[in-house]
Length: 282
Image (cartoon, helix red, strand yellow):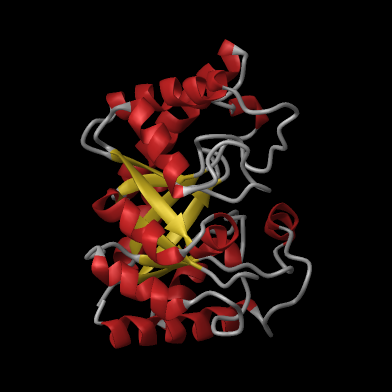
């Protein structure tokens, strides 16, 4: 059965008191893997994280995003340089932790609202920066996640992700899809998943409202049948959020309480996804 993971943003964005307690809870719930987004390169000690996930036998995935001062689509060359160097640092961090790739929406700045129509120069800037990162770390994958129009002005669909991958032209750039974003931007789930095929190495699951699984509109059987069709062998990672984690709630517009608690959402989600994997023999 596919390994099932969860994004730690469901509980926290801060690790000042160490990572072990939260990771231990995740392991005791029955998860196989954990996804940790990097907000900065000094937020976590990669050695400590590697030791914790190793001790708990949890697979670890690292994701990253860009801010205004590291925008790889910027007209300013120095800003693009900072973004390129930041992503190189994220790759080094992910490799130290033992993560199999670096994933995320680092094709553009998360949450930025474009002030003008997106032009070819922004695509070119992003491709040039990501090509430099991918070229320096050949053999280690960069995995691009299309996210919805309210969170990215550049790559919203699987087809746009493929366009950027073609522009980058490096074989170690792959795709990461997410049912929450697909529900907003794609025409259907089946053909989109089939279109990426073995280019997809990571997959996020969330309901259309990012709340309790099975209480939304995502056509889960359709999604999992498509994963079987492409012989998907990566992890399936839950990415749901709660309003109690204020920084995440503000960024992702989580204003309503969609579950009794983060722990309840995680446990229900794990049981739901595991049942789908068993049903579809994934």
